[in-house]
Image (tube, rainbow, N blue to C red):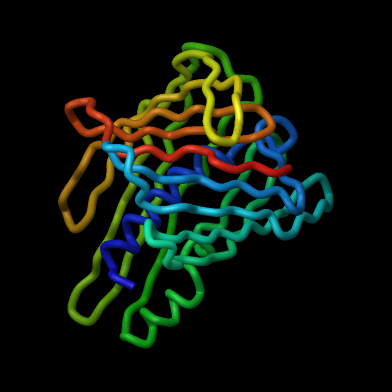
Length: 233
């Protein structure tokens, strides 16, 4: 897989997981075996760029902690499978923690290892309060991925800054109509010293998680959108 495309996928994957999964599992996100979600990514012109399917495959409860395994499958606009991965998350005390090392598919890790590369992922856990209110400020979060190659290292950093609950509104997608909180934030990515700022908005519904996410360029124009197209709980 092309390295730069891989980085872009992991970046968008981080935006999804950090926003849709890092909530109290009993209120915003249904951590139940068999629950599945499908998100369709479109560009600024509304053209489909890819589809991501998520399925919760295993949930265990022990000592007040809920541990879950989620399968992710990403296909491009032509239906070709680009990425498949299992990753782990745990929920306790009103927050979800994600195993960042499991964000990168094992077959991709093997491919890079066979090419003499190493990959390291680190980050800070993001938290979203169980009780949201309009005007509320939320804590920042970040993730960093380093690809080590012979003679050079490539590092991608993504910071989520200025996170805030803007308002509440009802929106409709192919998956249905949902009452949502609208969250805004700035996504600051840095790759090999090149920094890019992409504001975004997230529509978040109780019992579902992310319903829609829109990313904008520095002029405030829509760059791409990801929205829920199928949901089974």
